[in-house]
Structure formats: structure tokens, C-alpha cells
Image 1 (cartoon, rainbow, N blue to C red):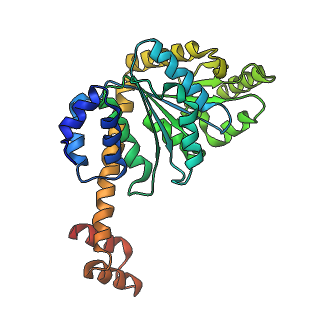
Image 2: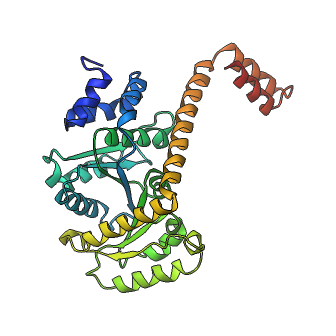
Image 3: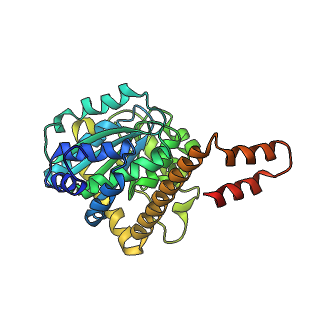
Length: 318
């Protein structure tokens, strides 16, 4: 590990060394051979960070809202990690770099660590890398981790699977009500934030959301959490404290109902599955061009063996 063991890197990261945190996340992104050692060193220090996801359509002010939340959490004396994830493409350099430019005011704060991350095409994609990057930030002593999606579409569902609390941002005049219903964002939201609330149409957006929440879904089940709707003007810091209060209230509800533990167990199960599947794909990849896989493929191609039996035989050979 070029002069530093995993334990040393973790210790330095916990002391607030941003280079150590960056190197640990690089091990994750690059699927480094040292990753097992890193995970083992991090494990005793993980499990205490509050993970808050932010998602929404482009232009609603995700990065501005993230910056405002970071500022508020830092005022409370908490160490904050920010992970800007893009599951859609490793070529979104402009958007990823843009996040860092907008968060420039926190760039020199030793209590804030900001990292942009794309799936980069490695085995398992974002489902494999992002949970482990979160584990690094958690183990490094970040008390709050904000996960902001850069991508759209599947990104909304993806970020919900990573977070304890998912904030869905909307803005007036962007057709977000219809888009939210289409994308199924209503189902993943724990807190709704209507940003740019100083614009015309903010009250109508809130009304549309309330109406859609009344149509059914998991939020209408008996005893279920009903997402609050908070209005903000993130560029001026207005409403930020209301967002923090809503997140805290959701966390208290989850703790009381055992939902926080259930969400974290589901997340851990998905992480274990992703690691196992990535390892399995790697081993199958090693067999490509080998006699075992070629022989099975030939039998399936000629109809002497069905693909399910072939897959069983392949797994048995592993």
C-alpha cells in the first residue's frame, strides 16, 4: 500500500487526514487488492454515521441544498462527508467537477470531506462501490454523510438504497409533480423539499405533492411514516434548519419503530451480495476462453444441454 498499511491509513483518516480518506476511497474505486485489509481495519469504526441521500431532477438545486446542509451541520460541530455519485456514466466530468466548484466554501474545511464518484464500469457498478465508499467515510469519523446523485432516472432509487433518510428535491415550474409520479420518487422519499420557494408556483407544487401523497402507496399504510414537505430557498440558506429538523424527526421515528436497523441490515445484505456477485463474475470471466465454459457453451448451442443445467454445472465447477 505504498508505505502505509490499512490500519495506519484508517488511523490517519480518523484523525482527519483528507489524503488518507482519499486513498482509502481510491482503493474502493479501483477494486484494489488491499481492499479486504481496508474493510477489516474499518469495520470496528463503522455504523454510527447518519446517512442522508439527496436526489431530484437536474436544476432543482441539489448541490446548493447540499452546501447549505453542510454549513448547518458544521455549525453544529459535526464532521461531514459528501459523496456525489453518478451511476449513469463515467464521462460526466463537467457535472462532477461542478459539484466541487459549488461546494468551494467547504473545500478548505478539515471537518468536511467531499468526493465525486462514478461507477467507472468496474464489476458490480455503483451497487458495489458506493456502499464501501460510505463505509470509508463512516469509519473515518464523519458523523453525517450526504449522498447526492448527479445522474437521473435509476439514480433516485439507487440513492434511497444507500441512505437512512432520503430527501427528494423539487422546484416550482419544472413539471416536477408529474415527473415525480412517473419516476416513482414518491415511493423513495422520506422528506420532500420544495426548493426555490420564492418563485411563483411553490405553493402549487406543495399542494400537488400533498394530493399525490393522498393517492396511496407505502406512505398511506397504517402506522407508516408520512413524509413532511419543507419549503426552502437554499441559495439564501432559508429553510435549512427545517430540513434538518425533518431529518431528525424521521430518524427518531425509524429508531422507535426499528426501521433504522432494518434499513441498515438490508443495506448490508445488498453490499454482501454485490461483493459476492462481483467475485463470481470475476471468476467466470477467468473461465472465458477456457475449456470448461467453452464446452458448456458448445453443448447449449447444439441443444444437447439447456442453459440452466449448464449454469448449474458452471457454478459447481467454481
